[in-house]
Image 1 (cartoon, rainbow, N blue to C red):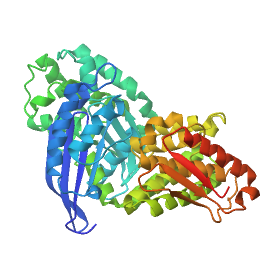
Image 2 (image 1 turned 90 degrees about the horizontal axis):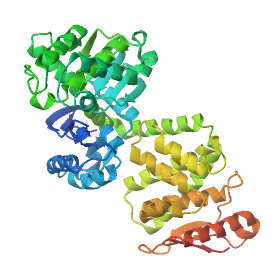
Image 3 (image 1 turned 180 degrees about the vertical axis):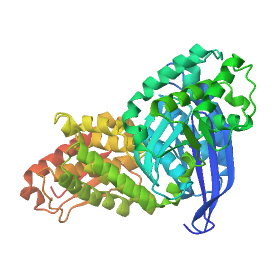
Image 4 (image 1 turned 180 degrees about the horizontal axis):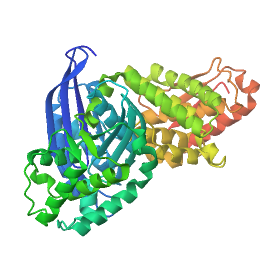
Length: 502
């Protein structure tokens, strides 16, 4: 990117919301402003995993303030993501609908592994460029990410549902600090993290690094008490534990370097940190400067091609894992892309960036449309949709994976299962292009598209027409029959498909 270009990253964490703003200076990002608000949204999930009204309002208020600061930024200059709390929240769409408006930019809920990738990327950018094998640990409000990497390349990434807010609510809800409570909390955290031992054991890394809130909170207290700065040791954790137990409760806790808003969640954070140290044999952890928002900045600087390549690798990995017929998927993708291009370029003035994004997603859905056949050929579109809705795919947000899931679910069969989604005009055009491509490629060979066109009848109506040459239906009677059946399927929706020349 050119010098002077400005960028902004927004991180909606379970404990804090953060906004990082800066400019590109000779190829490097220089921070010009950093805003952080303790929203504590992770504490607003009820027993049914719904965000309560207070938690949503606190988030909206914070994002409105961030949105005012981001006024004038362009879409390609801002990246906003949400993590574990909104991954869990069943009513996240209710929150996000207004949150997007308050911020002025779309907020993507990312998977745990995608969060881990971004964390490692942000940490590694702040470290020397060498081939050191690194273990990066990020203990957040409701999740803990563990990443193994070498140099600037992450290799093993995982996210665990254990964090400072969640563990404090569960084991220190009354604010009382007892040795027994810490023992129970540490054992419970170890049980959740236990599966990490084989992949993250000490033989796999040279140095451990800690990122984000819990690490910073513990480090600040240790430095204020006279411990050497820049790292956390087992001795330091033992000292903090003794201090917490001696204080007996969060209300009575008096530690230099401990912010007031951290007192109610420090018990959970310390117990999780101690569990990680014990399980993975860590004696000393370096405090890293980078984190998730820095990883977002790297992606924004990234260089669009970097994310594109990452997504392509994710799609290829899923296709390989589930034994997809890649040649047929690419065939369907080529035909679907051709039809979609006719719809969008002839009948609607889409901006090039949005059109290109929709085209890429359509092609990926086509490549993966048979992914569910690995489970069962019966209703394989439903199996495929489930896989994509629950797969961790590097480079994709959860909403993007859901988009692919909807396309795979709707690529065959009745359309009433997608009634709610058919109000989205872009999705309808992607879906129609994919369904027609699957029909035209039903014989699993390249179809004859000579003289065939697909277009909107007008720019505001809901009618589309597929035209073919006069002898096409006679030459391909089975395809013609399937296309006539497709017309009937769309008649049961608010949209209409017409055939001409059949």
